[in-house]
Length: 176
Image (cartoon, rainbow, N blue to C red; front, side, top):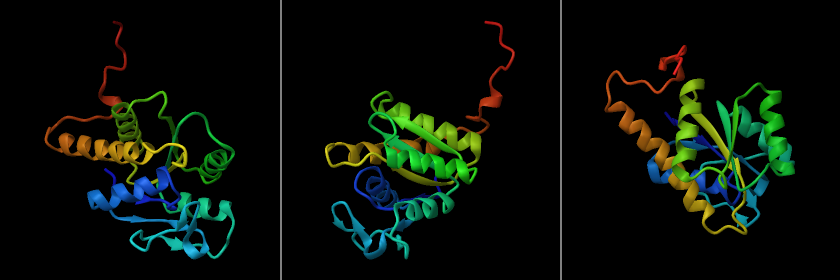
């Protein structure tokens, strides 16, 4: 279950994750640049993120990776140089990460993949990062809908006593 959303508040996936946290009443936190500067201006105070004293990109990323159980990287296409740094940081600290290309995975599929990954790795605090919304006006709403989908699946799961989504409950030796 998502118990906390971690984000640095940059436009796109990070800001949408914070908006989803507020909308769904999920606790959120994270690290942003000093002076709360983003690519779109100053990050509003409604987002409960802290300013990093270090002005570097890698410091902000490392703090967010370490503040979470794992990192979900949502993109349109492959990983950019900055997102490769996020992946490398997660690997350096032995933190799980999941990259989902939203061009290849519709919203319901993305929600299900993240949900399954969370269950199989017992993850609760997720750092959401990824593509920026500068050229993609629909990205923010899609990310919010993905997080809503994860929460909806959690709610439905709780209503099915005795049903587990973990992989190890499937027939391992099926010969079909």
